[in-house]
Length: 99
Image (cartoon, rainbow, N blue to C red; front, side, top):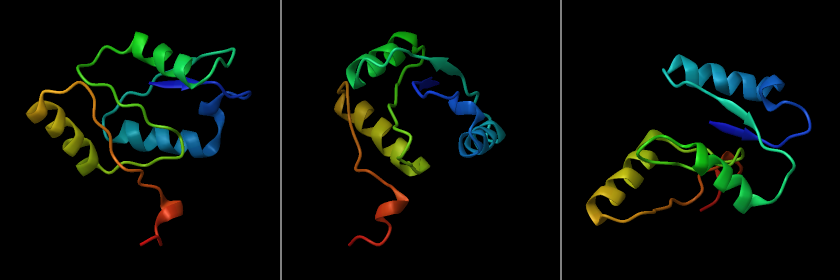
């Protein structure tokens, strides 16, 4: 689910449309909702959480990429530690040359 707060519909932007095609190709349904007016990050997260129906929820900002192993690791931690929340360091191509 994508909670869109942009001025122009996000799903109409070429890069977003390409990402949607990739996700759908891998069997993921993508749903867009509009969440306006902008009331801050906490409200944005709560809006998404209120609409979530799955056992797990992942908040992923539009400038962050996660590989499948990262998701598997976070789910494993939640299950093994019996905790309610976990996180992962940011994986972004803008940091690909950082050591």
